[in-house]
Length: 107
Image 1 (spheres, rainbow, N blue to C red):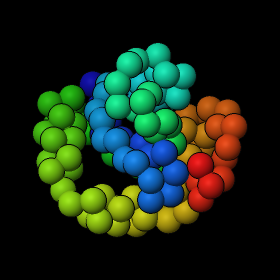
Image 2: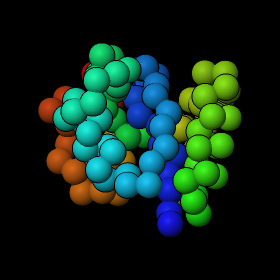
Image 3: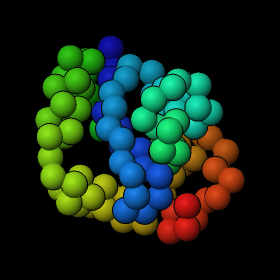
């Protein structure tokens, strides 16, 4: 079974959230629509800026926990290495509609 570690951001260099899931489209939809109470809903963290695939959920959870221990600048470097403009990967990878405010600099 495939699993994913993902990073969401409120905007470029904004609030960051790291999570893991076995159903990336479903989980990103939940974040974007505010269906689950918690950090991402409270802080408006909806832009998918980084994704990693793993063979199983246990590997993804280990990676997620390690990444959560990183310094913020390490997380930003990881994002910018793969996605230098902080584009919403939910649009390009998952076929989601763009967020209403689709300028990563201004959200």
